[in-house]
Length: 76
Image 1: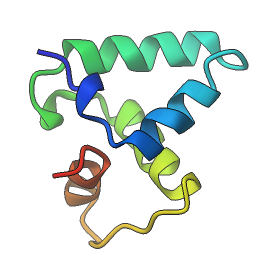
Image 2 (image 1 turned 90 degrees about the vertical axis):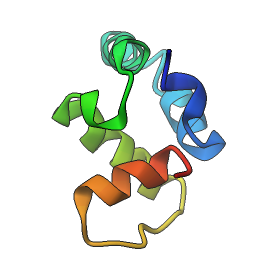
Image 3 (image 1 turned 120 degrees about the horizontal axis):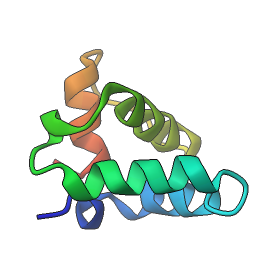
Image 4 (image 1 turned 120 degrees about the vertical axis):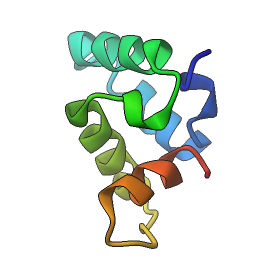
C-alpha cells in the first residue's frame, strides 16, 4: 500500500516540481511514501517537506498540531 497516491493534488504537484532540481530528495520522499502504510510511518524529514509543500501550494493548515497537519496533506 502506497501513501503516494493519497497525496492531495496540490502537494503532489509541488513534489513533482522538485523532481528535476532535487532528484535525490524526490526519490527519497517517493520511497518513503511508497514504503509507509500509515501516515505515522513517514519519517519526520519527509513529513516536514510535505507540510512545506502544502503551504507552498497556497493552502493553510487548520490545526497547530503537526500530526493533524500531515493528515491534511493526504486529504484526511
